[in-house]
Length: 581
Image (cartoon, rainbow, N blue to C red; front, side, top):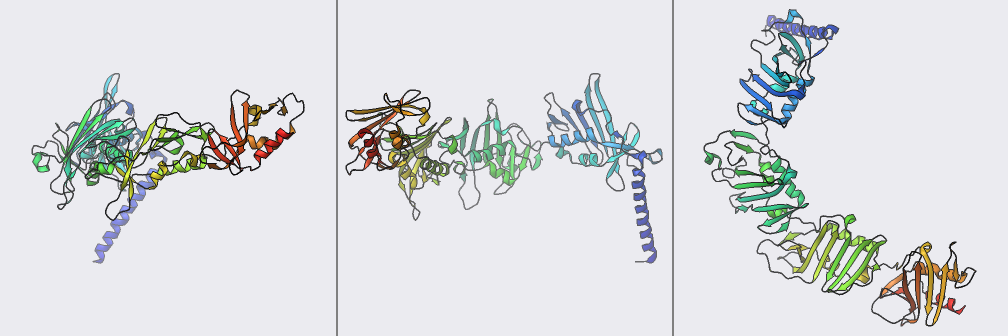
């Protein structure tokens, strides 16, 4: 490069740097501080219309707010506005500040106002009628961080944010949401059609007719089944928030160009208020570019392929696989059915209680259930999932008399267990039909073992836990002999008519109040040398049980019709001692 040319370039750089430094220093002067709003006097809460004449991009558009507060693009066409961009523009109108330029710099041509880049008219609704504030936007400053504006003939300079907001294509001011609705208001989803994902594959049927039943989504066609709320949520909220990738045509006359003359998929939504929205989807060949339109609306849009995938989940992929949708803390009862024997566990104030009945017969007396064993059952059911559904060639299966159900305040969940099932080379599993479903699923083998649990396996070894302060009397009966004790207001126990404390009773009192077993025994056997124990509560009522000897001479307990081996092996002999004194 010639030395003279290099010198000229260096001089230009120095001059530009000096000019930028001069401008920065000048703006640091207190006389040029930002001291007024760009849209002085404008109250954004009253703004009802914004007109943008973007001379730089050669378009004009008008944004208007309706009586409900929603913004629409009304010129050059009537469509909902991009609310995010409108809010950004309103923020600029509300907060942008400027500084005045000295008269020496007020050069309209040099500042980019002949013509201006953008003319912005903001219309407010006031008591005196519409009030319009016009701001013209000119060129950016040398450093590109500020922009020149003109208002009522005055030249001002502010940060470039207003320029960044306005320097957009007209399409950006349009809402990119196809459906303007809230997903939580959708109560029905109907989908028909099919899609072929690869030439070598058969078209996949996308039929789905689902309804929101309380808090639960259920399919009614092509078969009844409970649906996974998360998967349905992906579809529902995907529909509610589906975004336009490209505005293809606002007035499409040849729908065959987009395959929309015979759409592949039709999606219809029903809302809680009874209204409906419908979308038609199609594509050309196996393209990833999906075209969308609404019946009666000539506009055609395209959407991203991932967005289309969310709308086209097959029904099989949306089936609920969890045994129940509830957590263990909300479960109030568990039922295990084994043939005609029903075992019911109920959560009470003092813990879980177990009872049984055969067929429609009477319930047995309640027995305390082991809290750890019940917690294990709840934990297993909480994580139990249907591993697979038998959808192709649905077999005609019969139940095996095994069933499991959970109950909460809000409902009942569970189903029936069927015979074993095995695919070629696969692990054997148990079939399961959930209540209300029409398709059998497969669950682990241990599910049937859970349904076969007996009450005896779940009974707690802690047979009784009585609060001494709540007891008023104790009666011991051995044949024709009877011992009666009363508890006084000081908490001491006395024999009938005895003023002194019955100290002999203390040797067995705790063992009777906190009655424990080492194991539960099967069958009903009459106990030898039986002693009946009855506690009477201060508030009324009471509890009774027997302590006696079994066939092997072991100390056994009989409570609520069930027999157990006493944990304290000499409890019977201790009670006999009381009768001998």
